[in-house]
Length: 285
Ligand code: DCS
Image 1 (cartoon, rainbow, N blue to C red):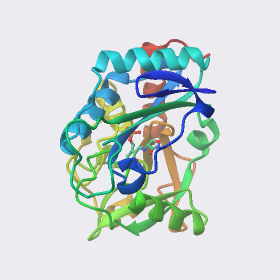
Image 2: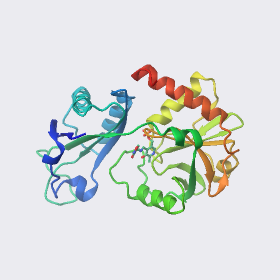
Image 3: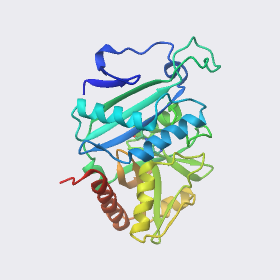
């Protein structure tokens, strides 16, 4: 894993340093993606790269590469690091310039960094589920942007960890938005509910794979917000993300979420998720 992509070039990780005047470092002024690699293949790459360019546009940043160039770089990185199963983290910052809130001039280019990380599917978590804590969503109103500014998410996640939980489930005025680093869905009377993809959540790629699975399995679904009360009364609760795929929530605030260990709809969705991976990236054995 010793190679990284730095400004369009493959470089040895230990030869690269971050400039103290990089706007990502000083302002969190940048965007990122985490993409899952199965069998050396970038799963749902198109969706991730399109979301990256959409995030760039929303923060008025120009990415100095085409989507095709980006794919070539990431494939080279995977090959060079011989990554079979894991993730690619990639980020772009608005560039290096003397500290000033104003955007730098057009001569300053965005800085691209990408690296790989080994990681297997979290089979045990996906099987047994995780515990969650409900916390007030105190983040800004552009959660649709995959911004490097993650302080609100970091604080919420740590609060959940300190309470012995795995994830924070966030609410605004009693309405569930998403997790600190996942999307949240419930199953109630056979219907899957998940927050609509607006400015209050990140439109997760795994969330979209899950919704497609609902469609193909004829499981009714509604992109409709649900309340804390509905969450606590749901038959099944689950979170989705690039690294966690579809993972059941076992307990919320110490109370069982649905019936512990009984996840019939979740199991169906997990099977479809695996099938989607295999269609795109080949057999997972
Ligand atoms: N919501 C938030 C706030 C997230 O940070 C993420 C992903 C998601 C939802 C789920 O989106 P994906 O399905 O597209 O992954 N968080 C990434 C992260 O920071 N690490 O791993 C995934």
